[in-house]
Structures are given as structure tokens and as C-alpha cells.
Image (cartoon, rainbow, N blue to C red; front, top):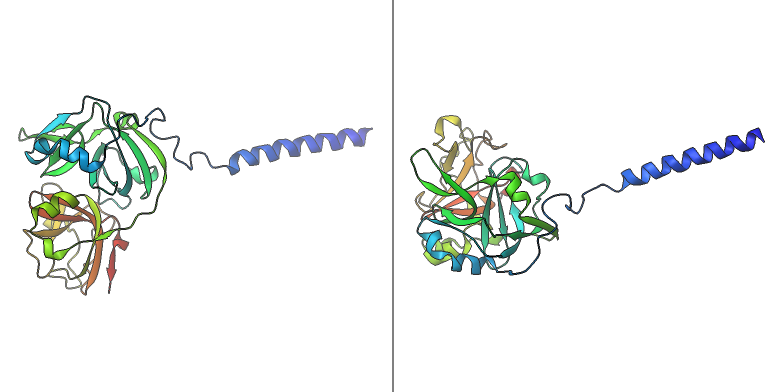
Length: 279
């Protein structure tokens, strides 16, 4: 009888242990459901192109406006802060256009990986631009008294999006023949793109992506490409990016990144060092 009790106790302990292992085996939150707001629903879904058209006046006049009625956009994350070059922002696109969403939060790549599809409730958020780059966020006034759409509080953002799943993401080719085409810039700014067969101007094995001595007021550095005016297109890198102190490649490269705009200049934001492929 004593042996029977012993085996029962062992079996009971194994059952408990196995149950604990089963709970740990299912990694919580793999679908992202622990982030955002599961109550967000599609009641008035618009495309990103429709959103930009509706608010074209405030976007292209450097102003901003609060969205007061229920309205949602749905898009796939194409850029985040995985290596520190895209700061407090994510880029999303939906096949009709792209949008930058500004959030005062670091480490966003942990919950909003490239390929995550999200539904965003826009009501009470603001739409506008910085340098005519369309953005979603809240108003911010800088030290010079200029107000524009910038980073919304983290808690506010958590109440305004819902994670839907994962989708594949592929960049489109940047058309170098349309560098000066204003309509092309309006349609594609903020999008994940690749420019093929270019060289960094002044690359000599020592010049790096973003040296502190070269930084501007935003702690970033613009690097030009050979044969392309820096008034038309630059590669823009934060001095805080993981690859900021890496030497610029000296040969021909393909560069993938989020192609934003600052007024009439394209600014390529590389997401990670592997976005540059040497040929």
C-alpha cells in the first residue's frame, strides 16, 4: 500500500510539472494581441491614399488637423527602430500609399515588426506633415515656436491600434528618372523602396555614415550619392544608429529604406545595415 501511495504522488507531481511546461511552451503574445487595443474595429475604413487626399490642404501647407470622426486605416509595417535610425516612428503602407506614424516610444520593433499588419483608429489623432511628409501624431511646438505633427504619447498610441497578423513585405524600385517629379514624390513618399546601382559620394574607406562632427540640429547626417544632387536625394542617418560609425561602402550598391521627403528632397532612411547590398 505504501508503494501505491508513492506512485500516485509521483504521477500527480509529473502531471503538475507537465501542465506547467505546457503553459510555458505556448509563448504568450506571439500574435501581438497583448499590445494595442483589441476593441478597435473597422467602422469607417479608408485607404492611405484617400486619407492623404482628404487632408491634402493641411499636409501640403505644413499645417495639421484633428480627426474628429471615426476613421481607420489598415497597413503593414515597413519600417521601425530596429537599429536606431528611425526614431520614434513607424512606417506603414497599404498598397495605395504610405504613412509615417509618430510615437514617443522606443523599442517599437519588439511589438511592431516589419510585416505586422495593423488597424489604426484615427479619431482624436492629428494628421499633418513635417517638411510635407504626411504623418499621424499629435501637435508639437519647437523652441522656435513652430507647431507641427509629431510624437504622440505612448499610452495614447496603445489605445489606437490593433494588430491583425503578419504579411510579406517587399520594396518597390525607386524610379531615378522621376527625381524631380512632384506627383511621384507625393504618391510614394514614406514608402519602402530600393534604389539600384548607386555610389556614395566621397566614400574612401574612412568616411562613415554619421559622424558626430557632421551632425545637424536633429543629430543626423545627410550623405549624397554620386551623380545625384543633394538637393534632390540624400541618405539620412542618425548619429544614434547602430551603423552610424561604419564606413560608407565604396562600390556600387543597392539601397533599401523608407523614402521620406523633406520638402522637395528625398531622404532615404535605412532601417538596418543589411538594407545596403554591395554589388
